[in-house]
Structure formats: structure tokens, C-alpha cells
Image (cartoon, rainbow, N blue to C red; front, side, top):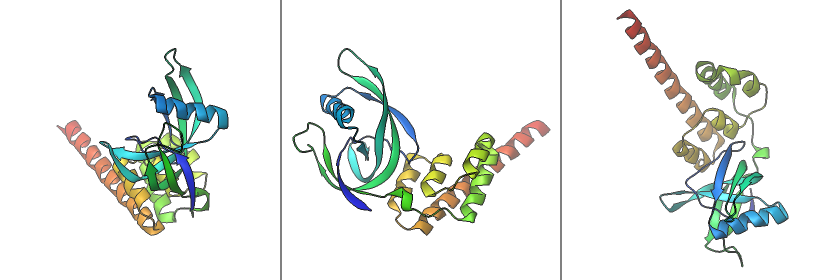
Length: 199
């Protein structure tokens, strides 16, 4: 991990690396953030905030494109998560900027180990049951825990748990538990459907 200074945009949103989202930018301070991206190409951090309460984890994002600029100065942008971070210090203003900022410890996910065969086996079963069209793409590459979390369609709560667990084995156990729960739900749904047919 390394410590960097980042512009920050707290939101009730958590993205894992590779996930894409759209934002509507209308506040003046965040319009300034987007303008700074246009002039420098810098990314920014989205620390997760639930009901206005900031957590210590977040998504490092890059703006992929500005989808629409409105006459009132607001805009619609597309962002992509490229890494995750832990917040070290948060300031309501980033130097002389209007938007917040602070220091963050970036994970550098390129250094992560690939997931174990046990996780890959659970992922394979999950995709067969739910998203069979994604199997060739998902299983043809080397995956880390955040890739698997993205493919598993984790809830925000589970994403937060994944980010807060620093030990690789504990992260993998969270994913395995998620897949086992999904498998049980899938089996139960199939059982209910069979009962409906028999009746």
C-alpha cells in the first residue's frame, strides 16, 4: 500500500475494481472536481458514506467520459473503479479547492495473489446457476478477490466487509460463505418450483 493525497467525493456507493457507474454532478464543488479531471486527467476517491456517516474505505475511480453537459453547468459522467483504498485523513476542503480531500492508503491490487481453487470452484458453480454466459470470460483470466466479488454481485454491505478484511484468507472465506448461501437459495428456489409443478 502507498499513501496518496486525493480529491474525495463521499457517496453511498461502493465499487469494486472494474465496476462502472454513472454520476450526476450538480454541486459547484464537484463540478470543480470534474473540471480538474478535464484539465489534469486525475482520478478521485469515493469514500463510502452511509446516511451521511463516512466509513474508512472507498473506491479509487477514473472518469471514463463525460456523457452530457447541461446548460446549468451540471453534467452526467461515467466512472470506473480502478483500485480501492482506506481513508487516513479526511478534510472538508482539499487545499484551496471547494471539494473535500485527504490522504488515503491505496491497495495497489496488481500485487494481490490470485484466488484459490476452492474459490474458483464456488464461483464456477455460482455462474452456472445464475450467469452461465459469463463463464468463458470469467474463468479464462487470473482473478483476485475483488474480481470474484464483482462477478459475485456482492451487496454494498458485503463489499464493505471484503474491503475491511485485510487478510487474504478471511476475504476468501467471505466469498465462499456468500457462494454457499447463494447455492442454498438456488436449490430452495428449484425445490419450490418442482413443488408447484407437482401440484
